[in-house]
Length: 292
Image (cartoon, rainbow, N blue to C red; front, side, top):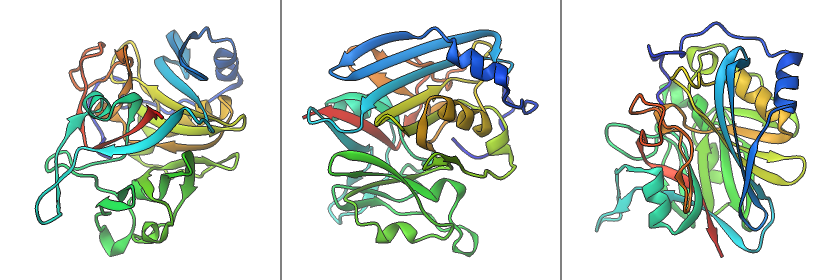
């Protein structure tokens, strides 16, 4: 999702302060829960009549044990390599990336170049750097390049980086995906600056690690009357209520997609401006879970 203001329904909104009533709404929510694999649960719910944050909201959550011998995490990309071993920018829907990599489930990943393809932030897959962070003004890292998901010994971790480009090159991990902003770390909310990207409601994708040693992959649909989307303060509140110790914002907007094998796209991607499952955007990378 580009960090700009979109003049679409329910995007420009007055910031709604999270209240005790929102906590009660989430606590009393009726979730449709399905087991989609051993130890893996898919939960979904739809808040209507402006029940949550004074807005309609459609939420999907995949819950996965942090430690599992039956499943394997992977970062997958749409980039291919030419004969000179240089990345060729390409884009493909999250569902396509999932199927190409025989995934059990997938969520869209980090931010990317919509026009030319390729991630705009550092991506390393199996020890090979696929994309490098684009330089900003004064080598300042973009807000979406100051944290990362890493895979270490088949366990997902969320780590905080630095505000300057290049911090990621020293990470000792074989699989790294930069994204952001970081929402929570070690049980504490991060301080988010006031800007349009953070404060306006959009579809959102998020990865969390809970206090109960679960990984949560979360999507919130948006840009429609059925689901307004969330600003990042609301997303942080949701993550906190779900027991997330660490939480990281992924690319959102029209990119927000959650896919499950045998069920297809289960959220309502917004790129076709319809509240259906057909509005997927082609993306550069995704986070997937495979069977071992």
